Amino acid sequence: MIDNETLPVEYLGGNPLCMNQYYQVLSSCRIPGIKKDSVVNHALSNRPPTYITVVHNFQFFVLDVYNRDGTPLTVDQLYNQLEKICTSSLETKNEPIGILTSNHRDSWGKAYANLIK
Image 1 (spheres, rainbow, N blue to C red):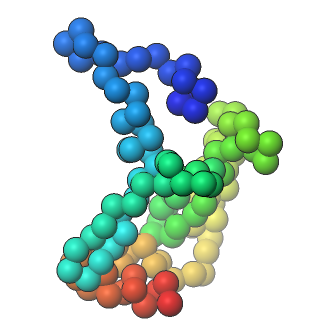
Image 2: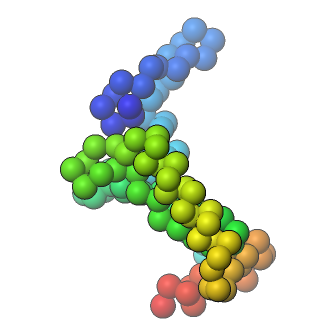
């Protein structure tokens, strides 16, 4: 609905809000840094995101929100993926990397820098 601009306009005090706010909020992520975090927005990139990141049980997962042909997934398709994520996160033997995000920003920033190497 956002991409094809069919989402109804929201109003505040009788005034329409700018609907571009959804691209700012839903296509942004915070990248941890050692002294300062940064915010990256992917809405205007050549290849906008087709997935969201889901964190469950301190594990990170990719949840696709579009089909290969570019059409949005149905609610049932999204629900099925979420069920698989919940099951997988409880059965995994992987280290709970997500717990690092609860550290102080500087130590999480250092850990993140090491993880992406």
